[in-house]
Length: 159
Image 1 (spheres, rainbow, N blue to C red):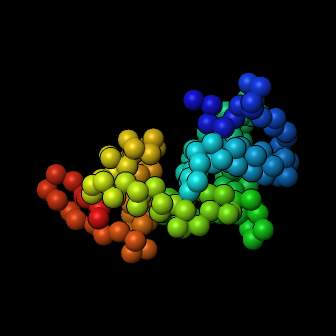
Image 2: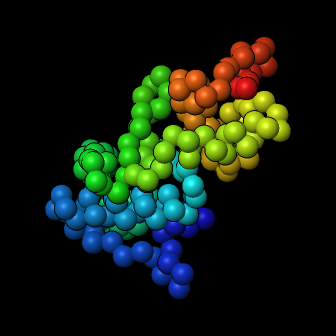
């Protein structure tokens, strides 16, 4: 999968590849926005996924996790292109496009909930995300009182 890193003509999005703070911020913003646009409305990217995508796009001009987190914080300042969220009890860091609201993130969950109770496994399959991303989404929605959890013997279901 190209994760939004390919342009319509098949070439990769252009990266500065520079090591200055502004170059890294620009690359993180460009890669994150491209991947989130490809994922669609209400999409989230975990910070470790941003790190992997940025380094994949930059090729041999690799950046450290610390540099990516600093760049994400810069991109998530008011007026920036991204919005940072902490998910789950572990405080996993995720980003969304700045225009994405909590309601946008909840829409796919609510649509799935109309069919049957939710589990992290089902959400991961239906939304084509990792099980950990699904678990974070469900825990975040529960924390905001959008859904409630039932700890059944076989797994946790959300209603």
